[in-house]
Length: 255
Ligand code: SF4
Ligand code: SF4
Image 1 (cartoon, rainbow, N blue to C red):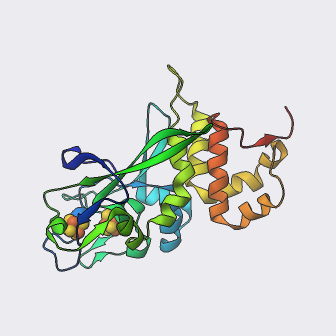
Image 2: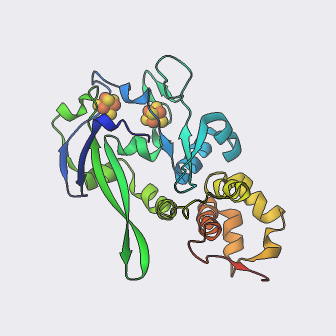
Image 3: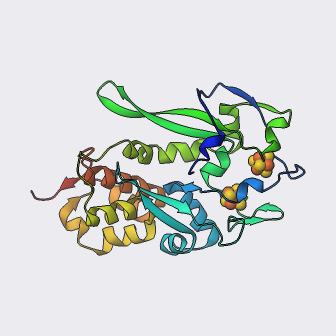
């Protein structure tokens, strides 16, 4: 999500932090948060949403998203494209609420909590450590309600845990910075994007191009990747790490 920085409460919170909040259909601001907003999509969001809409990943990305490239990391960020109307409404908002509620993106699930990540060392391994903050936007009346949660309880209630678990390695990749004066070359950039977001095209790339002549996929992993989109996504993260020289995740067949 591109943040409305004026609404960010600039304090780092933990999973045990308590807050009062309730969002429901009877509240005066119902669906106000679904307009004039930039929602960043994660790889797992795209799998869930395109399945829900009966689209291929390529169709979904073309129809509903736009991409920006972060200059410092070369990381491609995919955003939900809002309607071209005065309010910049989300294409999925209706008077009844979110029309894809069960498949809504993880950033919509988190709201009004925001999630950040910092790099830390665990032994010799770089890991991503999460922290949380609040978005207190003037129009959001949910903070005036009486229901109390910890951030951990909120995450569980909103079905967030599976999203964070499956997107974790993608978030680790974002922590890598370009070497000074370098950006990722365009072919690698395109491959990085496909491997993280466009699963239908990525599957064809692996199994219908010469990819397997150049890279070994050990054991039964190739079969799993071909038949299971989550395994394919995890393989995409491995390929992204290889392209970005974060980790030797793949084994070339020849030097
Ligand atoms: S996806 Fe659903 S919850 Fe998220 S902004 Fe759109 S309508 Fe609102
Ligand atoms: S309470 Fe906040 S999150 Fe709920 S509909 Fe209103 S603005 Fe959106």
